[in-house]
Image (cartoon, rainbow, N blue to C red; front, top):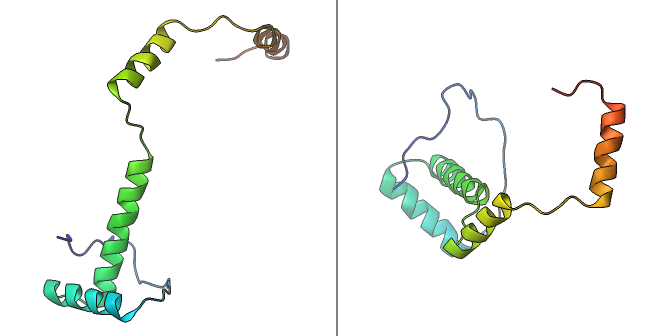
Length: 102
């Protein structure tokens, strides 16, 4: 169930709009859902959109590894590869250019 309302009390007046096109079935579903919660359609839609947007962002902000992948990742951190000639040259060029790097 939606925890209503989701609006930030400091957000102020709602001034932005987003338009979507949908069919009769979705329109009826939205109307019924809003009525069952006893809120306006706009409140229902804002809350549902905010919740789904937060869920999508949260899901994309972390990586879930299988136990096998986690073991490989850990092993790679424990045994880094030897630096390539190009990496050594880049480090040498950096030391020449940068006097203090805290």
